[in-house]
Image 1 (cartoon, rainbow, N blue to C red):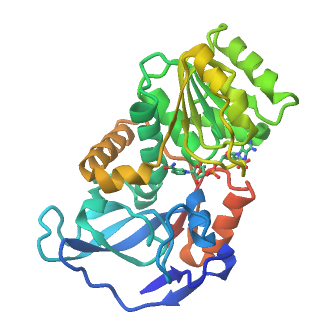
Image 2: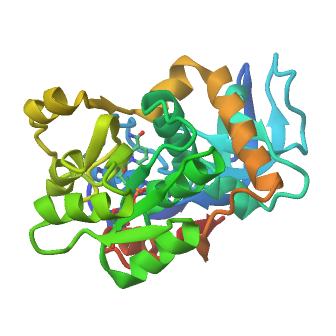
Image 3: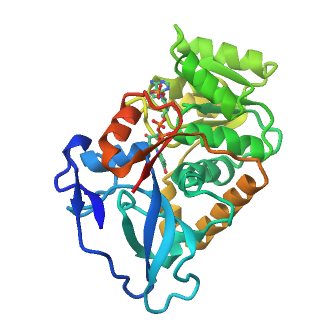
Length: 329
Ligand SMILES: NC(=O)c1ccc[n+]([C@@H]2O[C@H](COP(=O)([O-])OP(=O)(O)OC[C@H]3O[C@@H](n4cnc5c(N)ncnc54)[C@H](OP(=O)(O)O)[C@@H]3O)[C@@H](O)[C@H]2O)c1
């Protein structure tokens, strides 16, 4: 089978598509023949060696995919050969085959295409845990999603709406991204590249929320945007730190938290997968159900052959991806 292999941490272009022996499942494991792999920003960090968890070398990147179970190891009862499954793993999905624990696999609805199942992986799980578990979002809450045209951002916009948020506002870079954020469901978008973002974001949020501020901020962007977003929050608001797509880690000013009873909380979604797999499965089935009932639709913009992985990742890195990219092994 063919797989993208990282032999040294470094630029994504240094990884190669290599021929490897077919996989055999161990106890409690299954082998999945992948039909789609989700391309995610953290894949770049993992390949460069800049991610919080470093896989042992050599490894295949890729945290989510979908395909068909081709072999089942000893003791596996919840899956059978030929089951169509979505897969969530720490790494390994940029490949024709993946061998993983059966608990990492979720049966797909019969009508769901593989690219959709792959696209409903990491970013939707992250957005769901951010909104409900970390931000404790309540029906009617005003929600600001930063990076609202990106992977986590657009998933958070769709899920916030589907899960009962009031106003959902997108923080974006430029008009093209604003269009994507509105297509995902934002009633309003705010350009984060404005002059004097610190005051300007607060003024724009006040205008969009009748002076209330936002109850929830979903923040995969970081940098100076986080500081500006904190100043735009309502009393008792909750901001979830998810990532630093802007390239720098913000410093949180504690006086903002005190003055308005604000909570800032972090999310490392993969911890839930490792510690509470049954919780992650419940959330995945809920996400599938929201898709089946027409309340979620991932914005897949491109399906590319697995061999084009570096091109796909470079598009994410340079901000020229407009929607979810799927690799097809
Ligand atoms: N904590 C977790 O469990 C978890 C899970 C998944 C992802 N993450 C992290 O979350 C972050 C985002 O991931 P993603 O998959 O959503 O990435 P993505 O698809 O590349 O989206 C990032 C978004 O942020 C925007 N952005 C970048 N720099 C910005 C700036 N200076 N000001 C305003 N907007 C800016 C991007 O706009 P352009 O495209 O125009 O640049 C894009 O819309 C990454 O750091 C990733 O590692 C964390």
